[in-house]
Length: 132
Image (cartoon, rainbow, N blue to C red; front, side, top):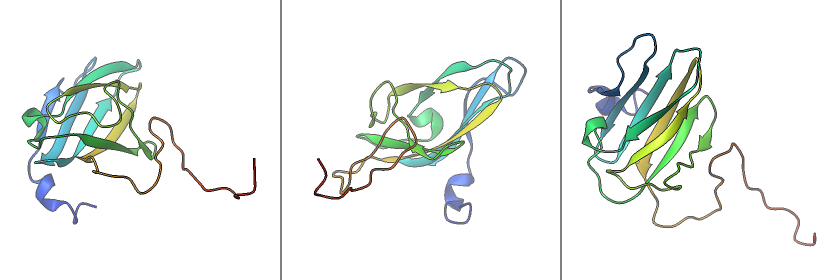
């Protein structure tokens, strides 16, 4: 993945707390409308973080975006602002205790060719047509 997105990894943007006891670190590697956001909570308690999807984290695009959690689970993120928050908005996400969340932010598609499940891990599969 690093090789595919090397240009993004050359600059790091940092918001929220510095790495220290009691703090939750949020940083990104991003450019325009695409990037990776890391939420690091080393504390023994969960917290809530506000993540700005703007220039502070390297995002300068317009319109809506989608957020895919790559780690610890592979799922589309459903933020309180909806499945496609606008660039420039600040979203609120949980930072579970002693966990790292890795998020990929990219422009929202103009149309979908299949249904998507947001907020929980899952897939949508077609079932037999003759079922009720």
